[in-house]
Image (cartoon, rainbow, N blue to C red; front, top):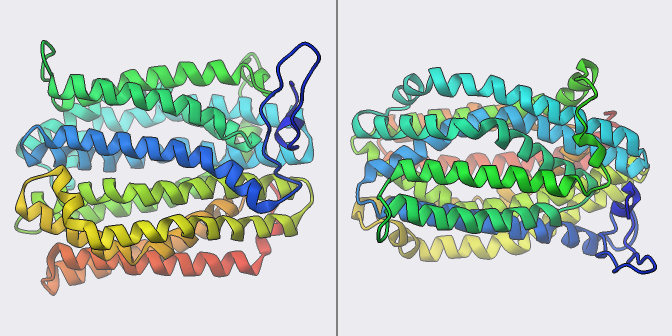
Length: 471
């Protein structure tokens, strides 16, 4: 069935002489609860697989036997997250536009939005490679890296830069599928990609048997190979989708479309920059502690562990984006609003039990990744503190996704500016370095700012002005 409407209706279509296609989630009709879950569970599976892969990667790096390796991964990922904000600005605009046009039944417009997004992702990759090539070492030094940690992290960054021109379009192709309401195809791609990544991590990082022990260099090479596979698989599936014409890049890039995509995406990218830039400053605060490597290693393990709840929140955030975008396109604002609240309820059903696990099992979780007593204690305190912030994460992440579906990305960016740079970082500096509470004090400032962000975003969503947003 080669039509955009496939992604709007929920009927099992069967043509004579062919196998029936899979049932498709009903986004603009039918039961909202079932629609939300139908969109969220493939994203949930995808994110859990990605999280498990990240945890296994951290475990492999931890088995190298020196804390500088774990700290190098944490520092590198902070910089990479800033760089990735470039492609996320494209991806957010892509999903919002494709979803809106799909809900309105305007297939040609959806296809053109997808095509121009792919062009824009290639431009973003070219621009993003420059900082990683020329500014990686200075940035790492600013963040407190030195000695072995500096050498490891700079080498890692240079290697992973190689595949950025493939990685950025792969991210945008995933955004195209989500705009269509197809969350199963990205799940299939990521399932195989993660299996490949884990196998390569084990072989290339630890070097079992006849394989050389490459350490962090092996981790970077593994990441590159997995990205090549992910790009190829994404192209293969997109060529069989209703918007397969977007792969024909014979149509020249359009600055008008670029502006349209970025009008939605740039505020979201600015929000991501505020978050990741704030994370870099937060790491810099920890880097001024007497035992900074232990604190940064604990933060790295804590974030990897908390990624389980992050990924759950992101799954329902993705569902909210598709539901809100397509229902606004279909001129059903009330259904769009109800969809967002339903996404929050389902997210909380998962995230609250996990918060309990963080609180009660923190030391046991930390011991999986390291045998360093100091790092174990700090990681456990991180998980206990951030367990209380999970409701704020659920409301903030999911309803931000709903606002993105509506094309409203400016308000979440401003709220991030207030809560991250106006609350979290000044408070972290105060309690960590001036009042002397150390890393444990920093963890609690994270919790407080997360709760504040969730409360403000919920109030904005309830007010409802986003329903009239033009894209």
